[in-house]
Image (cartoon, rainbow, N blue to C red; front, side):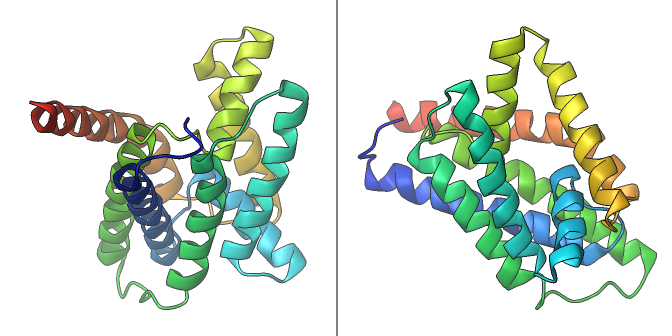
Length: 201
């Protein structure tokens, strides 16, 4: 959580968040269901006539405001998370191709989930602050004492329902993400840890 991180740590953080945003963009372009928070961002984008990337940034800012009563303190990684991921989605979604078949859409969504996992593994190991949504989730858990799994489930179900009511895309990709992102991130974190141990020796 240093305010003056090493350059290599900062580079890893930025690359991780770009890869995360690219994975999210692939899921959006696949058109078969977004991640829970992107369902909300897409729904909001329709309501305010903005891009999904712009709506993603606005959601991040709104969630950061919810940190205040929880007395959570953002790190450099928290701020960069809000900026880089939203910017990546804003830039990449318009230029990614639309899938020509259901199979291509499924492959795009699967690759997107893998990239989100890799990106998460990279930026989490930089230890420069959680993303806005993760920090809000852990802050709520700390304040309420409710198990983290229940807090996460309640938040993500709520944002999916709200986003869906606003026109966000819910589908196979949303379900696949919910079921697989935990194990994918765990595998990526394990690999990152092994690489870190090897580099230290």
